[in-house]
Image (cartoon, rainbow, N blue to C red; front, side):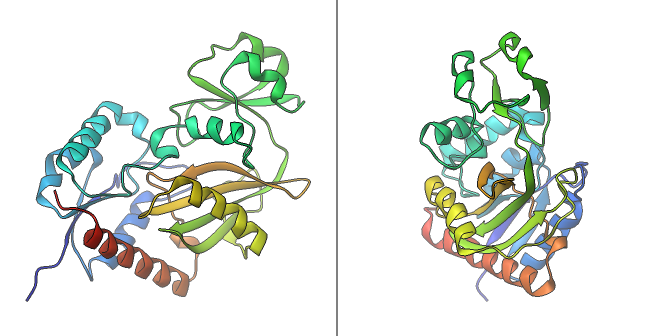
Length: 278
């Protein structure tokens, strides 16, 4: 009998995420994938030491990298040097590489919440009373704060991003495996980000999300396009998550969950078939 591909499934089952249960999602997902792969779960701090014994490393709900930046950099450097296959591949241009992409997309005219990191660019932001300030290396809303316009000049620029505070109707997320749309969920109450319901996207919605999937040029992997719907009906990008996007699989029905797991398994097989071995 031919051997099955071996997968090191990186997850922090003990991480306490606001409004989400990382452990439940990864226990469910890894158990479903076990039907096609030999899977071992490990903490992100152990990934660099263990990865050589596996065909593929899958990074899932491993918590914000900023909590173990040095160890993550060692993992990335070692995986790159050895040609280790990591899923998502380490070539992601969005959150995987930090928040610079929000500045790049703003400069390129994409439909994104306008973002600056220099005081001389404050005039390019829309006139609003409050602004969102967050660290460039932030994640999971860590370090995020809202400040009034008259305090912007006194901020320590360089390591922060500044955005106008958007009065939006709701947030919506589009979930992709490789370049294929899987499902969408939305948070109808702006004050409850993780209280989600099913969302039926329009062709225009999918066209919006597709622009960012195409921009990222990530051939394999899972991506989540987070957007907000403004009071004028426009969609603006909030975040393009390509490192370890939480999937909210507990908020989709069983057929959708089955289809997602099948799509992810097929994506892993394709990646194993096309990526060079270490």
